[in-house]
Length: 248
Image (cartoon, rainbow, N blue to C red; front, side):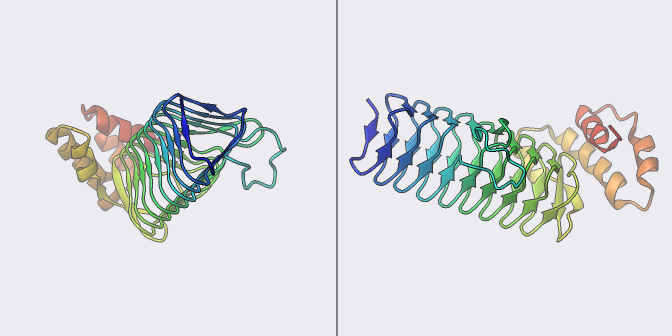
């Protein structure tokens, strides 16, 4: 049976797995579904309709779920769907989707203190949002992305796989996969060698990506010329990078 502190408020229409823990003064609303091993710490709030997969942790004063900050929202269900192993640290906010859509989070993501995930955002798995990182509505974050403190992404921007968004960086345009971006308006500074190695990418592929990133973003040639030059590169990650830069 779930362990619910006497001061917590858990709606009778919420669904809690048998080993869920709900701490003092926490609130779990109707429509919330918490998987095995979830912990809702003191003063945290899980609003419905929200689904948390197994082993998620919601720390004090975080709010997962609830109405989006969107003027055009019609007032329908604002859903949040999370995979397993996500950690929401203090004061994190995750808002539900608009007009019946959902905000979707993968698995094993870490949302540090004060991070914000807006309506209709899609976050992959294995991502880190450091303190104060902000994702505006409809942003897509692919697997393995890391945001430094106070970094942000504007509406509808896509952040590519295993990218690193440095602290205080503002992303107004799509960020290619595997790169480091930095600056008030994000600019590519190099390849994310640390992130790639942590994910077990072979050193030869890291080298190939580094060479491609230098030609595409740092050399004194046009982007079109660099794309033509690299078109025959046999490395699949290089081809993934090139595909992200070509018109849809």
